[in-house]
Length: 460
Picture (cartoon, rainbow, N blue to C red):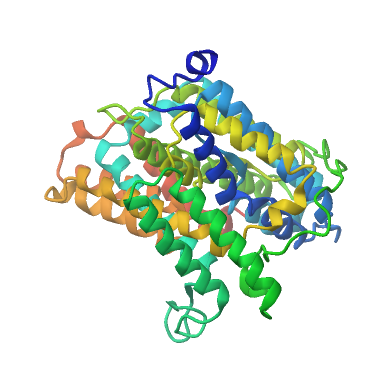
């Protein structure tokens, strides 16, 4: 069978049906980015006061995601979808754009992708990933599980900013409103179907909840903003013409002239470090959950996967969609059975279809998709059994890795804290032989990352 040979289905213990379900589930869990990324980027002005067009950004976001995900499918053979990275787009919109034009900001994104490609093809990125202790890799999986669960809970409105507390239950301290009710229904349905080993449990739950959301939204007055980015309603038209006006609109080095070398370098450094370690953490965590890592924690075809991630960054910048990276929502597809690049073919094809069928992406609200993130987060927590909690040298950095991902809403922050503290503990004990030389370098880079504002003030 051609698909079996191309994607190693039998070798990875999967089937075409499972891959299709997994790819479709990943798409439904991440489709919100096609609408959210344009809102974030269009909400900012560049140094000239110009704004980007939401309609053109929607086309660019879907185009870049489709290309990047299909590249991952055929080159990396991994169940990873890629799209504009949250956090990375905020850096572009609010750290880069105020000091330079939009094409210059997107030029820095292209450069970020180029730097990551160089790190990948030279093997340095693989060496760094392999230098991280196995216990920390398992901790990264657990941290990502908590992180995506929190994303789901917040997106659904189940958890919100508190009044007198950092967070609270619902917007008022209680669960109120139809969106939260449907989220609870979807989550409970998903859990029941999953524990009963129902095929396509996650996908069925998302579809059923989405249909109910459309019905409720048409019959009951619900504030559109309470649904989040996507308000569930049947679109007036299924087809919309893509607008490619932002494709190719980037200036590689103009930002260094307009904003100054220091400011542009700080932006580039932030993009590279965030993109590098966000993707690294996601690749490790999702691969671990999919059972694709060996006993040493190594991921198959890692060099190719990392190279595609860098290319995706360049693709995103070249079409003005911001930096594309591996999406943590890929874990939802893995939870549905995805194990190979065939799932990414399905996700990439669906992302490509949204170029014409963008209105359909506005049907599935967070209330329907978020339960998948919560359930998969729970499944990823099982990796905590592989962390040697009795070994305090590992337990402390593992805990910080796990805790800081959800608490700071950043995979990079969790990885950085874990690496720094692990290196510090081993050095304090005089166990220098247990610290790979690359870990020293990575720790110093993370120290610079955490202190970037102080460094900018010092040398500015």
